[in-house]
Structures are given as structure tokens and as C-alpha cells.
Length: 338
Picture (cartoon, one colour):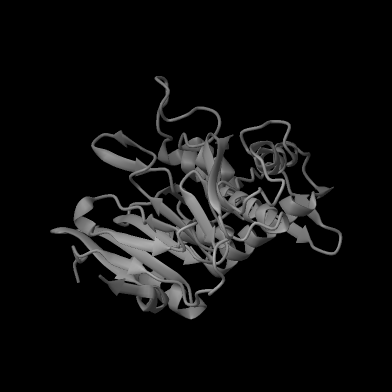
């Protein structure tokens, strides 16, 4: 069925009856991280009932970058990528947790989202060096892709010792999950500070809790590549949302669009017609990783996997005549037309 033009609302499965703080006021914090921006909106009682400030929130994000950035040469991930072949490395707790989750998603999706595919991502100009927007950038040849695919290997994890094995040359890239994890870090920081009502955003990935000072939920419009797809507005009350799409970062070459999402199974940018995938989940890390995996899988295989795992997933696919909408039953169950 084509996407409906009517405005639809997405409601969480459960809504807390806890009211906002008496005399609560809305405060906003913002900054930069991971090559993008972040923002946090919190409802504070009067006087302020916690010690949260922009510096504390920025410190949470800086810690994620220091461990997991493939853009920073001296990050823990950067050092692992340069490590000699055949070496084991004890990883920081957060890094190991995120890497383990990414490896689980890779396994469950048939390698549709593989954190070990960093070399191929870099080859297509979507890494920290040889960027696609630079004047001297040239897309890789089929032979170069094949060579990189032959070198691509997985890594072994040792959970009891929190170690990862570098077989040699593996380039980790956690960009499909780290941003969502950063959102969750900010949410946990706010929870720990006693903040019950907030909306957190990092580079378009969102997570909300509680309500605004007027008692209404945090309403956000889900990303869509075209107005004709119709608007979906979500109440992020105990929910996170992440969207992956081919309209964000891409380059054109010889009349073809090359999106930033790489299929690790073929070593090439996805070309299955998927325009956008939105995943709604309690954890932003999960929504982030699964939105990437679903983009690679495509609507048919993606919806089938979402049904098996109970994931709330919404696809917009370019087909003859325009965009076509596909969604899992978990997503459909949360949608209502106004």
C-alpha cells in the first residue's frame, strides 16, 4: 500500500501517570560531538533539583568518543585497529559492551551490519580519510573491493576477560551504534541525577522520558525523505527512535547514487531501493544498530526479521510510482491516525 498522506501518531505501549514537577521549567543544553550536534531538554523543579549542566553532559559524550571513535587516532578503538596481528586487548567496559552488542546484531542479521567492515567503509569514502567529498576522491574499483573483501575478517571476543582479538588488519567501525549508545549514556546520566522528564538528541537519534512542563509527552516528527510520505509524530515516553536513510550522506557517480550505508556482504553501497528505515525501541543503541541492519536487508527480509524479534520497524522504499511503505506489526500496533 502507498504511504498514507494523513498525519499519524505513534504512542508508547505504556504511559506513566506520574505528573511533571510542580512549577517545573524547561531547560536546554547543547553542544557538539561525533561530527554533529547534541541537545538535551530537561524539566526541572523550582529551585533546580539536580546538578546537571552542559559540562557534565559533554563529559559523558567525550568519554564515548575517547573509547569508540574511528576518527580519533588515539581512541581505544583507533589503537585496536592499529594493533599487531595475533594480539589480545583488554577493552574498557563501555567499549566492550557496545562492540559485543554490535557483533550480536551482525550475527542475528546475517552480517547486514558488521562492525568489522571498517576497511570497506573507508574505501568508499565514508571514513575519516579519503572522504567522498574531497576533489581527488575516486570510487574504488571492483578489484579493490574484492581485495578488501578477501581481507575482511571477524574478531573473537573473550567476555569473562573483556578482551578482543585482533587477527590482523581488522578495522572496527562502530558508527552504526555508537551515536545511539551516546544517547543512552546521556539518558542514564539524567536518570542518575534524578531527572525523570527529558528529551535527548545526538545527531538526529532521540530518546525521551516523562513529560514536558505542560504534562504533554515529548512529541517528535519521524524523519522522512519526502513530504508525500505523510507525517508520523511520535510520543517519546520511555522510547528511543533512530532513522537510517540514503538521503543523508551519499555521492553521485556516473548517474548513480552511492549511499553511505555499505552492505558488508557485498562490499558495496546498498542499492535495494530503501529510502529510509525507522526503528523504535527502548534503547537508542538498539534502534540505531537495527535501523542500519534493516536498511541493508531491505523491506522483505527486514520485516520478516523484525517480526521474529518483535522489533518496531518502518520502511519507505522507492518503487515505481513513488515511495511505498512497509512496517512490522509491532510498529503498526503503535500507530494511530488523527
